Image 1: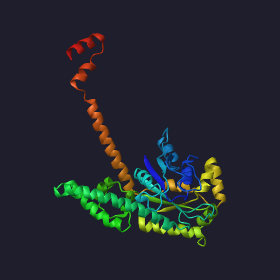
Image 2: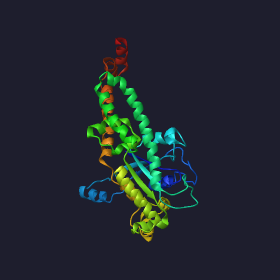
Image 3: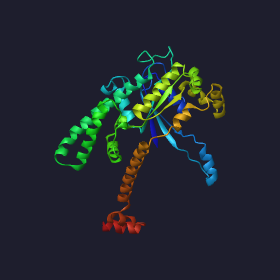
Image 4: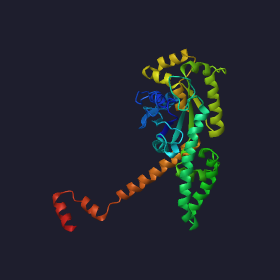
Length: 337
């Protein structure tokens, strides 16, 4: 199952978005930094109206939609790569997910404190990206140092890994995420084994206020929140080769207790045709993500086959005991062994 970590600075709406996506009130969403320490986890099915049509055409008796596991991860602050705030926990938890949903604050609210005092979503993205890049640089430099003995000994695998690291280091040193590095398909497969934080596919969730959602949906350009969303979309496209979705986490979390039809009627009353949560869940994943998951699944399958194969071949002693199905035979076998 694909897992996606919801990340961002403190007080940007991560836990509120998690509750909206998972349609629960599981994660505490309070107005103070680090109200989330241990990650919250929820599984969500991907809404797809085409499934009902396909099931009808194929006469399927059961519909099993795709599922995604969402993980609400503690907020990151500047200096996290050096252990500031909950940095070490943040980096550990993000390393375990397949993809990243980065929540950026595009709304104004004087009652909700921002760690940098002002609203600037691009600056916030760069803070998080810098911390992830620094963590990856440290990880790669340590890996390169460990490889040097094997490289000098002429080990082929070590030489290949070292060459890829030498490509990635200057790319990361320029502040660019590993996911945008120009690597061949073979090199990407090797690089996946480095488990770099910035190699994970990322999508940005622009969290806006209820009062701004309708204006943004209608394409108004004189709205401050709309300008912030546009800046995030441009940054995501040029620096991460990805996209951004617009969502009002507060509205979506309030719709959790409504039926689907009631929720859609409420959104249409705001001038919005579809749920931001649906757009986020349906956001297209890049091919690299499916390759990563397929490789992991294949590796797990190989380990399973190897394990079960070794268990399915009984030893002579085990086979002899397996034939002891009666007390008489058991006595004879005990004597024989």
